[in-house]
Length: 212
Length: 97
Image (cartoon, rainbow over all chains, first blue to last red; front, top):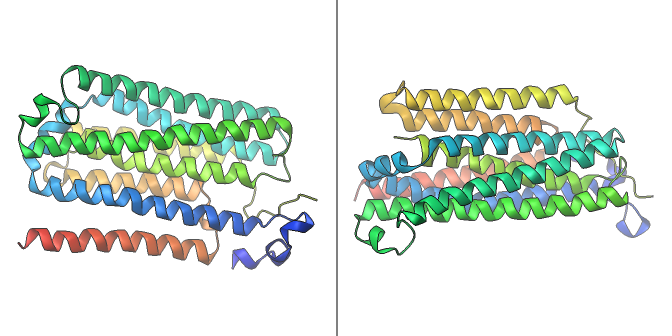
């Protein structure tokens, strides 16, 4: 069992300067599972209403900008690659490369949010936003599709923003040297969070942009 | 003093690059399948299947799930199973009303 393979790191008390590596990783995974069920509730709503209003969800997905959605998926997948490289680099003691890759990841995150802004702005300028008169005059299925679109991509966007802020803090730690080749679990856990947010988008993308 | 003992082995940069290339290839595949209506009636299942392969690649290559212990793997199984049953039970209610 891998978590017991290094019993010293598990039992060494933190006040003696030891770091409970396995405990910190398990804590992060546990948090991610609560996040999974949090997003799961919204995926449940989506799938049930999609089954009830297939025609409206089909029409709604046609309204989405597939090009922007595809670019954003590429951006997020690439950002997962760069944060993985940042962790691999710090483990090799390459602080400069790690900081460069962390900065790139933050830039990709901001890029994702800017593209999302343009998508939302296009919808809002068309009069489609929660509680808008145009939307309220549509059928129930259309209201549900666009409401779920705004709620799910909105909450996902907040997660991207939180992830970018967290990586910025890790960047400062790396610059100061408190994240280094011997101490990198904080960067690893931030990476786990970032990858999780990427996985959520991997499911959001086909559900809102592709499925017709 | 502050040394951490990671049980996750160092990974070659090329291994991450491979995962990234596979993810982009699957992205192109999922768009092609949807736009060309290759699966027609099975488009939902098909898209979600490809998405699940992509999620698996992220979990195995980027998140190193394979190197985690039984506790983490067990918790993941529990969370996914809980989600599956919540969705399945809700559907069994909604469909047979």
